[in-house]
Length: 247
Image (cartoon, rainbow, N blue to C red; front, side, top):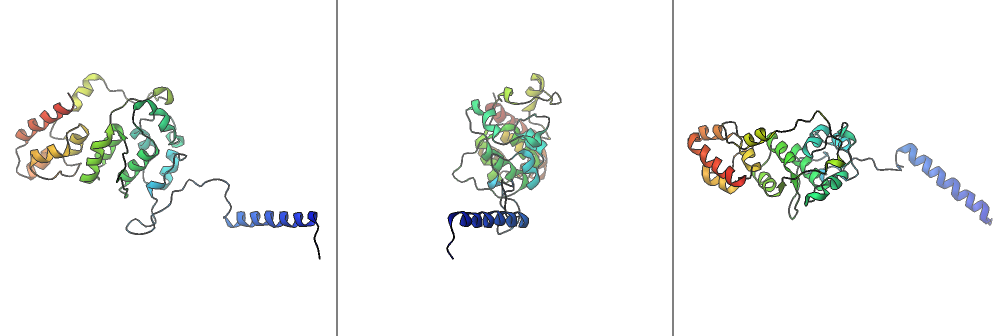
């Protein structure tokens, strides 16, 4: 039997629509992305979401759905003060930081999420810049390796934001000049991570303590006590290096 053009077209249409209906019923047909990153396929982190697949179209809320980091932490890290940070799209960071002279965007968020959650992330050959607010959060969490701290030391930048692109919340405290002046004073509770963010290099710290850089969350005083060092001697030496880094 020879089919004419009209019946043939009708048969093709029926098969096409039927296929779409069946695929939808089976959950195979999707008209838009699910905003779920791929997972690690093997090793210690198999089955967990991979930060490298975070995309610019994702919001902070999308990231929170797949990783153990809240939209509020992400907003604090990248200086976003929207009233609903979960709806903030990562791609907007490029506009906010456009005039900074540094590329801070999706790659920065990927790195932050990886370091914050302790997931692997290869930075080989990459120059991923991080605002100081993000680095401060990572160091305070205290789960970074010496190599990760060194990477942040190299690529952390102090920059202002294009505040016209940000919805400002009145609940965000503003530092006064007196508070800022107190920020870079070495005290007993000062951690090695803070020294790194203040601009003191890993090499200088290691030379002063004559040992490899300790965990970022370790306080200088605790380390000195545990390793037979005189904190009152170490303190001014470190302060001198801080003053050099932040004149």
